Image (cartoon, rainbow, N blue to C red; front, side, top):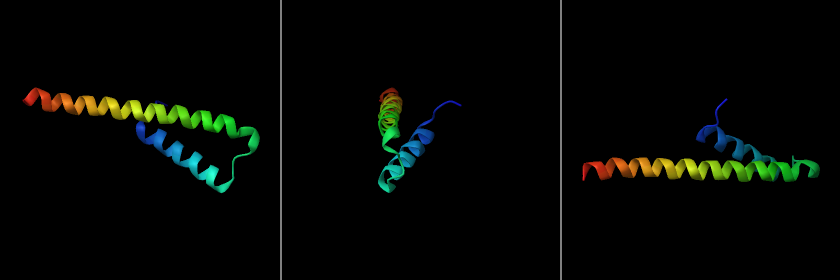
Length: 62
């Protein structure tokens, strides 16, 4: 399945909630934090791409 912004955000929310609830065993913590960092990078890039596309729409009308 292709990763979407919504899916990535949902995964981040799950990881965050698990961290807050103490649900992540210490042996899995580094992997979960690495996955969270990957998801954050993905979301930031997706937002940048969308912002660029929206800006392009406005630039074309100017």
